[in-house]
Image (cartoon, rainbow, N blue to C red; front, side, top):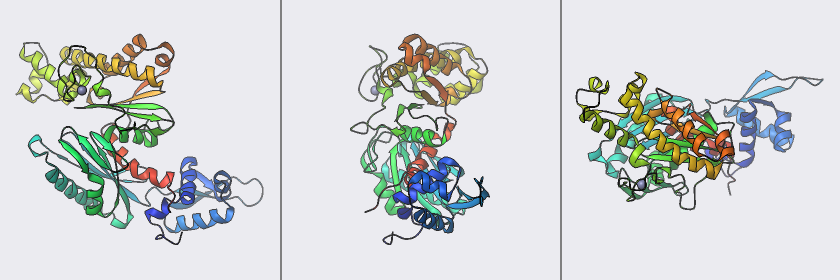
Length: 406
Ligand SMILES: [Zn+2]
């Protein structure tokens, strides 16, 4: 305990301190006696640790609890605004930065678009640091109250070293984003693949926070899955688990950017859905999309999702077609993993239920009876903030799960 600075992130991550914070967080509020009972720590240790946590504002004394005879106990609650965390999402063409409290509630969010000509690492990194500093400054939160930063990065990421092994859209290879950001920000930085971070965020703060085994499926310009098994992300031996976008769904399909043919991404990624709509409209298919955009080449996935809401037949049919392919891929996943839920994220799920209905239909018709009958396919509650909330969770989990320091 003497080796580290009081109230510092290193101190908070110590196992006993973490254990106290975790049981109070999990239970909403607890008396000191209950904390001792649940954690197995001695009452004296609990008194010392909670005293320190109250002085550092992590805990507050609140309402008086139920008495079982004698003096009613004072209850302790977590103060989510004791400290703050930076969450960063580096996605395809877009960087988002947020600052949140310890409950992952977003205080401030800023985003920038990174267009195709400017994917080189030095440029993107400079823009990223500028954006993070802007968010910190505008939030008016003191730097000392910021515990660390989490990064949800697209592509293959080694979460142990914080290395971007391969980022297909930016063309980055073997770049240590953790080290670079730690040097720049003077904060602890945690990095993971974006969809895995989303799944982690869902399991702490989203619709599946009470569910131990589920899969988050993200449909964007790439398609990926974050797998949670017994409350923990599954990484695979090379940090490459969950690449569902590269499951082959069409034997003689188009070439994918991974080099293979007929991958799910070639028929169901946002880019490919949009391309298909543009092609059909140019061939003369009638659609409200023609009125939505003066230049049909500028059509976006948001436009198509919006048109489906207006009951546009073309939009509905291409969303359903993409969902049928996605349904085949997740049926395989459900047969293998037998999860409780599949949480879906992406614009095609946002305005209507056509995509989710189609997924349900395919899974029920094609999946093994038991696992496909019981699985629930649900929309993410975090939606477009799923990646940044996931990124902050990479830091927040360190405080509550603890790590022994040596
Ligand atoms: Zn592929």
